[in-house]
Length: 226
Image 1: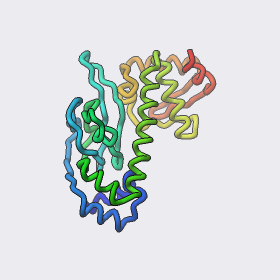
Image 2: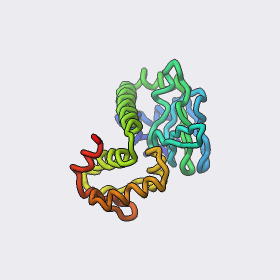
Image 3: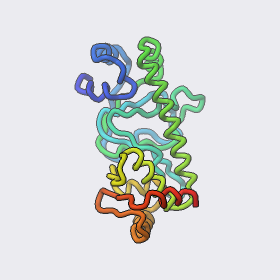
Image 4: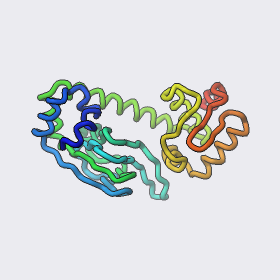
């Protein structure tokens, strides 16, 4: 467990815990580490969730897979991120989507009784857990907004404006492939490419490899209201 100390120290749940206390917590808490290969199903939609997962290495996605075969990426998580925290204490503690590994992944699972004990015995962990839940609510609200957008252009504009605020620059560096971005938006990869080309021809954006440049910020904002 000690080899993952740096990852856990940067995890939201343990960020306010000093290193000596964190070592004590790791030695005392009931947990298990599970390894997954790329594209493994970690948990299926509708499965019972009685643990939170802390990603020690790798990357996962929460996917909504429809009967038509359409897949929508609900969320992506990397090393140090947590999932399952908003479900384990719910009356309906079932995974709302399928959890899939995007690369070779190691996950530390904590049973909900261990989470309760941590929050009871370590006030900084309790405070961090509350912050984590608040952030997750904001993330879900953002996802609802994304899903309510009616056109492909609106979805692209929303994404670019969010990244503009996050990266504080009109030069947006993509942290995912265009195929993954299309899945995230719930659209087909060719449809995304066609709309990006149209937006470039109209002078709204330019793009090259993993970068998209916003050239008309005002028009992007107005496109969300159309």
